[in-house]
Length: 357
Image (cartoon, rainbow, N blue to C red; front, side, top):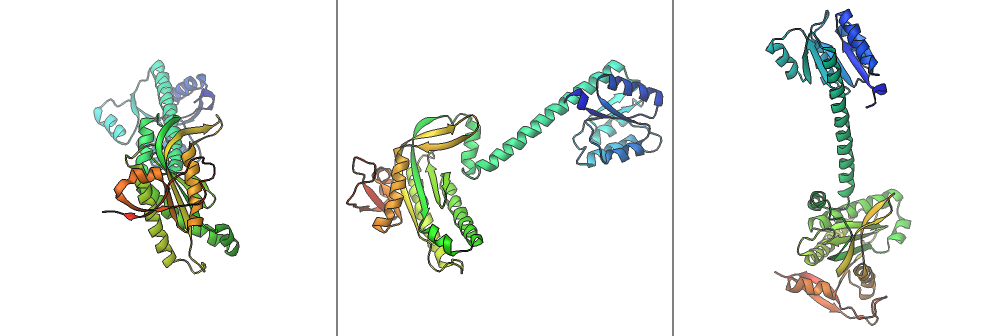
């Protein structure tokens, strides 16, 4: 808080003493607004922001404590450092002022060096408070952004660890969800209905992903890429992903039973799930960083999502995911004549049917 931009309120009914204090403050480069009574100062407070206030408790019209109450009740001055001044050295006066949330009580006669020191110290504290408020505001904004992609427990772990976003190779499960024929459907619907439909479906999907320990990594038009185990593992990430996909299938079935009147046919979807080692970390430049996961697993999950169209299924997973879920999920092996595009080796593909037990 540079001195040339610092505005100080001074209320002192002793005009000689008041002019001396005003001069001392102005010599430091502060902008000082000086008042001999409380009511004049109260009027000025209505449309002026002060960085610091010195207020005499005993004033000719109203008590300085009334001015203190008014400032603390105002959102503009609720956090302004307020130092009360009095010649009454009794403990009761000081306690009353502090109870009313004065920051400090200065006993007259004031030593000029001490007076200036108090001004400098409280302005410095106010600057630090402002930095803290700005930092908290940034954290709140970042938290709101993160809450769109991560569940609360993942956000807490990321924030607590501080280092988990560094680039690393980790085991994870990737899930792709895509709405079928949504482009054609969008052409038939009013834009407001399209937005409403996506909001309803994606809100339910995100709730299911978060409740199963997953994170939303990307929105790709009418598709979602979710990760389980990245950035942080829950210990049973593949099973969580499959459970989530089955819950989504059930939720979509319920949605179609009560679908809005503007939909003439059921909403169809496809899900692809693959497990393996992924690159997890932030990518980009110093201007903008984005958390992502990369690797062959991501490509396989995306391909499996598309292959649901061929097999007329809505959920497919790779063999590695099948191994990880074990007997917890009843599955059906699906055979395709062609290999997954981009893969030189055959990938076993399964359809999860239901949970066992």
